Image (tube, rainbow over all chains, first blue to last red):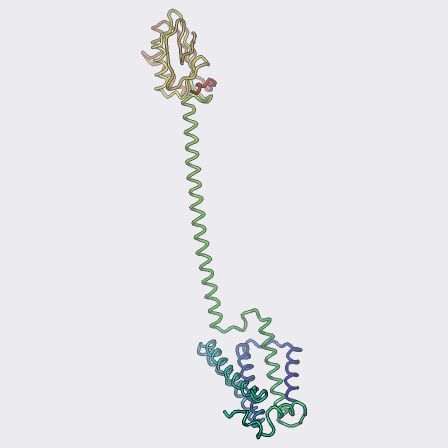
Length: 110
Length: 242
């Protein structure tokens, strides 16, 4: 309940303040958001499985975001930032799909 | 992964029940707060990204490589536009030169038409020349002498010749001796004869007045010849078109 409220509060805050993304962070924010979504879906799946642990969630969330942004940053330094960010998005997308599939089985039993 | 259908009955409580329970009962706890904070961060970040993606039309967020790609794309477009431009300019130049050539040919043809119209006696002419006046004193002017005069004038470059203000001489003009005058182009002319010739006055004057020339010939045949240079002669007679 509080978690869902937190999500709503975050969205509302974003809509109210409409902050400008710093130029240096601009390539990494979309990747970080997708990585965080992956962590959130993973956590939801774990919660439905009954094995949710807040410590694991925090660690996986932070490490997902940091590693995704770090990979893209490294790719930018190596000159393959565009391709690497595409690769990261693909991998995270696959993970999100499999997590959502598990969540769907729990909720709809189908 | 085990089939949830088989697991659902014995695993208590089920995932769905747990979710409903979590959504309907607000339970305080360190875990709940941390999850709320992280979810708030996700929502905030996602909305921020969507916003910046919506109104960010500049190239500020582009990577170096993306900017280079955009730049080279623009360079290619510029190159293609330049090629197109020079191709069109070449076409325009070609068309212009064709038009000029056609205009030049037209001008040349027009000036040729003018010259031929003068030579054929189709148009009135004005210009410098000489007026030769032949007055019979003792004898009738005979056609050979008259023809000699005309030939000399033509040799000296007379562009247009007119006799007595009535007959314009052309290449096909005929001369015939008449009872008391000359038939020129079947038209009877009676003395005194006035021959107007347009051309260089000095050359024409010399052509008439040289020793043993037409003037002397007329004098031998008993006629008075008067040659006068004129700065401006009007030849109004035209040769009738066939």
